[in-house]
Image 1: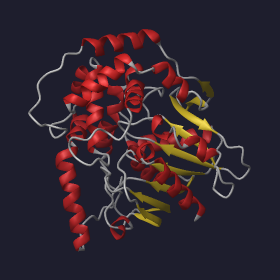
Image 2: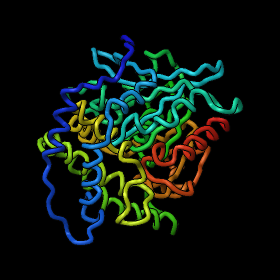
Image 3: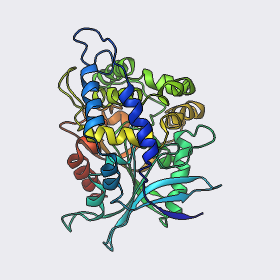
Image 4: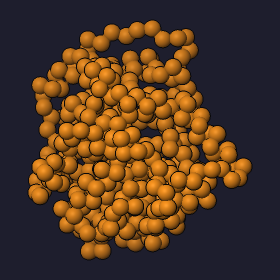
Length: 376
Protein backbone atom coordinates (compact mmCIF):
# COMPACT_ATOMS: atom_id res chain seq x y z
CA UNK A 1 0.00 0.00 0.00
CA UNK A 2 1.44 3.34 -1.08
CA UNK A 3 1.09 7.02 -0.22
CA UNK A 4 1.54 9.36 -3.17
CA UNK A 5 1.71 13.18 -2.88
CA UNK A 6 -1.08 14.82 -4.85
CA UNK A 7 -1.83 18.25 -6.28
CA UNK A 8 -5.32 19.10 -7.54
CA UNK A 9 -5.21 19.74 -11.30
CA UNK A 10 -7.14 22.49 -13.10
CA UNK A 11 -7.92 20.51 -16.33
CA UNK A 12 -8.67 23.43 -18.69
CA UNK A 13 -10.48 21.34 -21.34
CA UNK A 14 -12.96 20.02 -18.77
CA UNK A 15 -13.43 23.53 -17.37
CA UNK A 16 -14.10 24.90 -20.85
CA UNK A 17 -16.71 22.20 -21.53
CA UNK A 18 -18.46 22.94 -18.23
CA UNK A 19 -18.43 26.66 -18.97
CA UNK A 20 -19.96 26.10 -22.40
CA UNK A 21 -22.78 24.06 -20.88
CA UNK A 22 -23.46 26.72 -18.25
CA UNK A 23 -23.49 29.42 -20.93
CA UNK A 24 -25.95 27.47 -23.09
CA UNK A 25 -28.43 26.85 -20.27
CA UNK A 26 -31.98 28.16 -20.82
CA UNK A 27 -34.14 29.12 -17.85
CA UNK A 28 -37.79 28.21 -17.43
CA UNK A 29 -40.89 29.11 -15.44
CA UNK A 30 -41.47 28.88 -11.69
CA UNK A 31 -44.58 29.54 -9.57
CA UNK A 32 -45.18 33.10 -8.37
CA UNK A 33 -43.46 33.97 -5.06
CA UNK A 34 -41.89 30.52 -5.01
CA UNK A 35 -38.79 31.36 -3.03
CA UNK A 36 -37.19 27.98 -2.31
CA UNK A 37 -40.45 26.26 -1.39
CA UNK A 38 -40.69 24.39 -4.72
CA UNK A 39 -36.98 23.64 -5.03
CA UNK A 40 -34.11 25.70 -6.43
CA UNK A 41 -34.98 29.38 -6.74
CA UNK A 42 -34.72 30.87 -10.24
CA UNK A 43 -33.51 34.31 -9.14
CA UNK A 44 -30.67 32.80 -7.10
CA UNK A 45 -29.70 30.42 -9.89
CA UNK A 46 -29.62 33.28 -12.42
CA UNK A 47 -27.30 35.26 -10.16
CA UNK A 48 -25.14 32.21 -9.48
CA UNK A 49 -24.84 31.54 -13.23
CA UNK A 50 -23.84 35.14 -13.94
CA UNK A 51 -21.13 34.97 -11.27
CA UNK A 52 -19.98 31.61 -12.66
CA UNK A 53 -19.55 33.02 -16.17
CA UNK A 54 -18.23 36.48 -15.32
CA UNK A 55 -16.40 36.40 -12.00
CA UNK A 56 -15.63 32.90 -10.69
CA UNK A 57 -11.93 31.93 -10.84
CA UNK A 58 -11.60 28.14 -10.66
CA UNK A 59 -7.76 28.10 -10.91
CA UNK A 60 -7.64 30.47 -7.92
CA UNK A 61 -10.01 28.18 -5.99
CA UNK A 62 -7.79 25.20 -6.81
CA UNK A 63 -4.71 27.10 -5.67
CA UNK A 64 -6.45 27.86 -2.38
CA UNK A 65 -7.18 24.15 -1.82
CA UNK A 66 -3.66 23.18 -2.89
CA UNK A 67 -2.14 25.12 0.01
CA UNK A 68 -3.10 22.05 2.06
CA UNK A 69 -0.72 19.07 1.62
CA UNK A 70 -2.58 16.23 -0.06
CA UNK A 71 -2.07 12.55 -0.83
CA UNK A 72 -3.64 9.63 -2.63
CA UNK A 73 -3.42 6.47 -0.57
CA UNK A 74 -3.73 2.85 -1.74
CA UNK A 75 -6.11 1.29 0.80
CA UNK A 76 -6.08 -2.15 -0.79
CA UNK A 77 -6.35 -3.83 -4.20
CA UNK A 78 -5.13 -0.66 -5.91
CA UNK A 79 -8.08 1.43 -4.70
CA UNK A 80 -6.97 4.95 -3.80
CA UNK A 81 -8.48 7.49 -1.43
CA UNK A 82 -7.64 11.16 -1.76
CA UNK A 83 -7.06 13.09 1.46
CA UNK A 84 -5.68 16.27 2.87
CA UNK A 85 -2.93 15.23 5.28
CA UNK A 86 -1.77 18.17 7.39
CA UNK A 87 0.71 17.19 10.07
CA UNK A 88 1.21 19.44 13.07
CA UNK A 89 4.58 20.73 14.25
CA UNK A 90 3.51 20.06 17.85
CA UNK A 91 5.08 17.05 19.58
CA UNK A 92 1.85 16.43 21.50
CA UNK A 93 -0.41 16.49 18.42
CA UNK A 94 -2.98 13.73 18.12
CA UNK A 95 -4.22 12.14 14.88
CA UNK A 96 -7.65 13.37 13.78
CA UNK A 97 -9.76 12.07 10.91
CA UNK A 98 -12.36 14.67 9.90
CA UNK A 99 -15.00 13.46 7.46
CA UNK A 100 -17.41 15.22 5.10
CA UNK A 101 -20.65 13.98 3.55
CA UNK A 102 -22.96 14.76 0.60
CA UNK A 103 -23.23 17.18 -1.15
CA UNK A 104 -20.12 18.46 0.58
CA UNK A 105 -16.41 18.00 0.08
CA UNK A 106 -13.06 18.74 1.68
CA UNK A 107 -13.90 22.42 1.08
CA UNK A 108 -16.04 22.25 4.23
CA UNK A 109 -12.88 22.09 6.36
CA UNK A 110 -10.84 24.71 4.51
CA UNK A 111 -11.18 27.31 7.29
CA UNK A 112 -10.26 25.02 10.18
CA UNK A 113 -7.60 22.54 8.97
CA UNK A 114 -4.61 24.80 9.57
CA UNK A 115 -5.98 25.95 12.93
CA UNK A 116 -6.52 22.35 14.02
CA UNK A 117 -2.90 21.55 13.17
CA UNK A 118 -1.37 24.77 14.53
CA UNK A 119 -3.69 26.28 17.16
CA UNK A 120 -3.30 29.96 17.92
CA UNK A 121 -3.16 29.23 21.65
CA UNK A 122 -0.61 26.69 22.88
CA UNK A 123 -3.10 25.52 25.52
CA UNK A 124 -5.42 24.22 22.78
CA UNK A 125 -5.01 20.66 21.48
CA UNK A 126 -3.16 20.17 18.19
CA UNK A 127 -3.85 17.53 15.55
CA UNK A 128 -2.34 15.71 12.65
CA UNK A 129 -5.34 16.26 10.36
CA UNK A 130 -6.55 13.72 7.79
CA UNK A 131 -9.54 14.86 5.70
CA UNK A 132 -10.41 12.24 3.06
CA UNK A 133 -12.67 12.54 0.05
CA UNK A 134 -15.31 9.80 0.17
CA UNK A 135 -14.97 6.88 -2.25
CA UNK A 136 -16.38 7.98 -5.60
CA UNK A 137 -16.01 11.65 -4.68
CA UNK A 138 -13.58 14.20 -6.06
CA UNK A 139 -10.08 12.77 -6.45
CA UNK A 140 -10.72 9.47 -4.67
CA UNK A 141 -11.17 6.47 -6.96
CA UNK A 142 -14.62 5.48 -8.11
CA UNK A 143 -15.63 2.04 -6.81
CA UNK A 144 -16.79 -0.62 -9.23
CA UNK A 145 -19.98 -1.02 -7.18
CA UNK A 146 -21.71 1.02 -4.46
CA UNK A 147 -19.97 1.09 -1.08
CA UNK A 148 -22.10 1.92 1.96
CA UNK A 149 -20.99 3.80 5.08
CA UNK A 150 -19.94 0.66 6.94
CA UNK A 151 -17.70 -0.27 4.03
CA UNK A 152 -16.30 3.26 3.95
CA UNK A 153 -15.53 3.00 7.68
CA UNK A 154 -13.33 -0.02 6.98
CA UNK A 155 -11.52 1.89 4.21
CA UNK A 156 -10.96 4.88 6.53
CA UNK A 157 -9.57 2.54 9.17
CA UNK A 158 -7.06 1.24 6.63
CA UNK A 159 -6.30 4.78 5.45
CA UNK A 160 -5.20 5.81 8.93
CA UNK A 161 -3.03 2.71 9.31
CA UNK A 162 -1.29 3.32 6.00
CA UNK A 163 -0.63 6.92 7.05
CA UNK A 164 0.99 5.58 10.23
CA UNK A 165 -1.74 6.22 12.80
CA UNK A 166 -2.75 3.25 14.94
CA UNK A 167 -5.03 5.33 17.17
CA UNK A 168 -7.00 8.44 16.26
CA UNK A 169 -9.88 10.76 17.09
CA UNK A 170 -12.75 11.06 14.62
CA UNK A 171 -15.04 13.98 13.71
CA UNK A 172 -17.86 13.91 11.16
CA UNK A 173 -21.16 15.28 9.93
CA UNK A 174 -23.68 14.00 7.35
CA UNK A 175 -22.17 10.75 6.00
CA UNK A 176 -19.23 11.51 8.24
CA UNK A 177 -21.34 10.97 11.38
CA UNK A 178 -22.82 7.73 10.01
CA UNK A 179 -19.37 6.42 9.07
CA UNK A 180 -18.09 7.53 12.46
CA UNK A 181 -20.78 5.47 14.16
CA UNK A 182 -19.68 2.38 12.29
CA UNK A 183 -16.06 3.08 13.17
CA UNK A 184 -17.08 3.37 16.80
CA UNK A 185 -18.61 -0.11 16.53
CA UNK A 186 -16.06 -1.86 14.29
CA UNK A 187 -12.67 -0.13 14.63
CA UNK A 188 -10.07 -0.93 17.27
CA UNK A 189 -8.18 2.28 16.45
CA UNK A 190 -10.72 5.03 17.16
CA UNK A 191 -10.30 6.51 20.66
CA UNK A 192 -13.00 9.22 20.61
CA UNK A 193 -15.88 10.27 18.37
CA UNK A 194 -17.20 13.81 17.78
CA UNK A 195 -20.33 14.17 15.63
CA UNK A 196 -22.44 17.09 14.45
CA UNK A 197 -25.34 15.04 13.13
CA UNK A 198 -27.42 12.10 14.34
CA UNK A 199 -26.23 9.28 12.10
CA UNK A 200 -26.51 5.70 13.31
CA UNK A 201 -29.57 5.20 15.50
CA UNK A 202 -30.21 2.90 18.44
CA UNK A 203 -32.38 -0.12 17.75
CA UNK A 204 -34.74 1.32 20.40
CA UNK A 205 -36.07 4.68 19.20
CA UNK A 206 -39.45 4.49 20.94
CA UNK A 207 -40.29 7.90 22.45
CA UNK A 208 -40.65 7.91 26.22
CA UNK A 209 -41.11 11.58 27.12
CA UNK A 210 -42.89 14.63 25.66
CA UNK A 211 -39.48 15.88 24.47
CA UNK A 212 -38.90 12.58 22.64
CA UNK A 213 -42.30 12.87 20.96
CA UNK A 214 -41.65 16.48 19.94
CA UNK A 215 -38.32 15.48 18.39
CA UNK A 216 -39.89 12.57 16.53
CA UNK A 217 -42.61 14.80 15.09
CA UNK A 218 -40.04 17.33 13.93
CA UNK A 219 -37.80 14.62 12.48
CA UNK A 220 -40.75 13.16 10.56
CA UNK A 221 -41.60 16.60 9.16
CA UNK A 222 -37.99 17.03 8.00
CA UNK A 223 -38.11 13.59 6.40
CA UNK A 224 -41.31 14.42 4.53
CA UNK A 225 -40.05 17.74 3.12
CA UNK A 226 -36.28 17.31 2.74
CA UNK A 227 -35.33 13.68 2.03
CA UNK A 228 -36.86 12.72 -1.32
CA UNK A 229 -33.30 12.93 -2.69
CA UNK A 230 -32.24 10.13 -0.30
CA UNK A 231 -34.91 7.76 -1.56
CA UNK A 232 -34.05 8.54 -5.17
CA UNK A 233 -30.28 8.28 -4.77
CA UNK A 234 -30.63 5.17 -2.64
CA UNK A 235 -32.80 3.29 -5.12
CA UNK A 236 -32.37 4.55 -8.72
CA UNK A 237 -29.19 6.67 -8.85
CA UNK A 238 -28.32 5.71 -12.42
CA UNK A 239 -31.46 7.32 -13.83
CA UNK A 240 -30.68 10.58 -12.05
CA UNK A 241 -27.13 10.37 -13.37
CA UNK A 242 -28.21 10.60 -17.01
CA UNK A 243 -29.61 14.08 -16.32
CA UNK A 244 -27.05 15.40 -13.85
CA UNK A 245 -23.90 14.18 -15.59
CA UNK A 246 -25.02 16.20 -18.62
CA UNK A 247 -26.04 19.41 -16.86
CA UNK A 248 -23.73 21.56 -14.70
CA UNK A 249 -26.65 23.85 -13.92
CA UNK A 250 -28.71 20.82 -12.88
CA UNK A 251 -26.01 19.80 -10.40
CA UNK A 252 -25.76 23.39 -9.15
CA UNK A 253 -29.52 23.59 -8.55
CA UNK A 254 -29.66 20.15 -6.88
CA UNK A 255 -26.90 21.24 -4.48
CA UNK A 256 -28.05 24.82 -3.91
CA UNK A 257 -31.48 23.67 -2.74
CA UNK A 258 -29.80 21.50 -0.08
CA UNK A 259 -27.45 24.27 1.02
CA UNK A 260 -30.52 26.46 1.66
CA UNK A 261 -32.90 23.87 3.09
CA UNK A 262 -30.36 22.40 5.52
CA UNK A 263 -28.80 25.67 6.74
CA UNK A 264 -29.78 28.31 9.26
CA UNK A 265 -31.60 30.85 7.06
CA UNK A 266 -34.35 33.26 8.14
CA UNK A 267 -36.99 32.42 5.53
CA UNK A 268 -37.90 30.81 2.22
CA UNK A 269 -36.57 33.74 0.18
CA UNK A 270 -33.11 33.65 1.81
CA UNK A 271 -29.93 32.77 -0.09
CA UNK A 272 -27.62 30.06 1.25
CA UNK A 273 -25.34 31.42 3.99
CA UNK A 274 -22.32 30.86 1.74
CA UNK A 275 -20.63 32.98 -0.90
CA UNK A 276 -21.04 32.30 -4.61
CA UNK A 277 -17.35 31.34 -4.70
CA UNK A 278 -17.84 28.76 -1.93
CA UNK A 279 -20.89 27.32 -3.65
CA UNK A 280 -19.19 27.13 -7.04
CA UNK A 281 -15.95 25.69 -5.69
CA UNK A 282 -17.88 22.83 -4.10
CA UNK A 283 -19.94 22.32 -7.27
CA UNK A 284 -16.84 22.36 -9.50
CA UNK A 285 -15.16 19.70 -7.36
CA UNK A 286 -17.95 17.36 -8.43
CA UNK A 287 -18.12 18.57 -12.04
CA UNK A 288 -14.42 18.59 -12.91
CA UNK A 289 -13.97 15.08 -11.52
CA UNK A 290 -17.20 13.83 -13.12
CA UNK A 291 -18.19 12.40 -9.74
CA UNK A 292 -21.81 13.48 -9.25
CA UNK A 293 -23.12 10.00 -10.05
CA UNK A 294 -20.50 7.93 -8.22
CA UNK A 295 -20.98 10.20 -5.19
CA UNK A 296 -24.64 9.14 -4.99
CA UNK A 297 -23.70 5.47 -4.84
CA UNK A 298 -23.07 5.59 -1.08
CA UNK A 299 -26.87 5.98 -0.67
CA UNK A 300 -27.44 2.81 -2.66
CA UNK A 301 -24.69 1.15 -0.67
CA UNK A 302 -26.34 2.18 2.60
CA UNK A 303 -29.64 0.58 1.56
CA UNK A 304 -27.80 -2.59 0.52
CA UNK A 305 -26.00 -2.68 3.89
CA UNK A 306 -29.28 -2.44 5.76
CA UNK A 307 -29.77 1.19 6.76
CA UNK A 308 -28.95 3.48 9.70
CA UNK A 309 -29.60 1.14 12.61
CA UNK A 310 -27.10 0.12 15.27
CA UNK A 311 -27.27 -3.70 15.41
CA UNK A 312 -29.40 -5.13 18.20
CA UNK A 313 -27.46 -5.57 21.41
CA UNK A 314 -24.68 -3.20 20.34
CA UNK A 315 -23.72 0.25 21.62
CA UNK A 316 -21.03 2.72 20.57
CA UNK A 317 -18.84 2.67 23.66
CA UNK A 318 -16.05 5.06 22.64
CA UNK A 319 -16.32 8.50 24.32
CA UNK A 320 -18.66 10.56 22.13
CA UNK A 321 -19.03 14.31 21.83
CA UNK A 322 -22.16 15.88 20.34
CA UNK A 323 -22.37 19.29 18.68
CA UNK A 324 -26.11 19.78 18.13
CA UNK A 325 -26.84 22.53 15.60
CA UNK A 326 -30.49 23.66 15.65
CA UNK A 327 -31.09 23.59 11.89
CA UNK A 328 -29.35 20.32 11.01
CA UNK A 329 -31.03 17.87 8.67
CA UNK A 330 -29.93 15.04 11.00
CA UNK A 331 -31.39 16.64 14.10
CA UNK A 332 -30.38 15.12 17.43
CA UNK A 333 -33.11 13.80 19.72
CA UNK A 334 -32.94 14.55 23.46
CA UNK A 335 -29.71 13.38 25.07
CA UNK A 336 -31.19 10.36 26.93
CA UNK A 337 -32.40 8.92 23.64
CA UNK A 338 -28.96 9.41 22.02
CA UNK A 339 -27.35 7.74 25.03
CA UNK A 340 -29.24 4.54 24.27
CA UNK A 341 -26.75 4.02 21.44
CA UNK A 342 -23.72 6.17 22.34
CA UNK A 343 -21.40 6.76 25.29
CA UNK A 344 -22.02 10.52 25.36
CA UNK A 345 -19.47 12.38 27.50
CA UNK A 346 -19.83 15.86 25.95
CA UNK A 347 -22.89 17.68 24.64
CA UNK A 348 -23.32 21.22 23.26
CA UNK A 349 -26.58 22.75 22.07
CA UNK A 350 -25.39 25.33 19.55
CA UNK A 351 -27.01 28.77 19.40
CA UNK A 352 -27.24 28.76 15.61
CA UNK A 353 -26.13 26.85 12.52
CA UNK A 354 -27.17 23.99 10.35
CA UNK A 355 -26.03 20.91 8.50
CA UNK A 356 -22.81 22.20 6.92
CA UNK A 357 -21.44 23.22 10.30
CA UNK A 358 -17.74 23.53 9.54
CA UNK A 359 -18.51 25.74 6.53
CA UNK A 360 -21.37 27.76 8.05
CA UNK A 361 -20.14 28.10 11.66
CA UNK A 362 -16.46 27.11 11.68
CA UNK A 363 -15.71 28.95 14.94
CA UNK A 364 -18.44 27.11 16.83
CA UNK A 365 -17.45 23.69 15.51
CA UNK A 366 -13.75 24.29 16.08
CA UNK A 367 -14.28 25.48 19.65
CA UNK A 368 -16.52 22.52 20.46
CA UNK A 369 -14.14 19.94 19.03
CA UNK A 370 -11.29 21.47 21.01
CA UNK A 371 -13.35 21.49 24.20
CA UNK A 372 -14.36 17.86 23.69
CA UNK A 373 -10.79 16.68 23.16
CA UNK A 374 -9.45 18.79 26.05
CA UNK A 375 -12.00 17.15 28.35
CA UNK A 376 -11.21 13.56 27.43
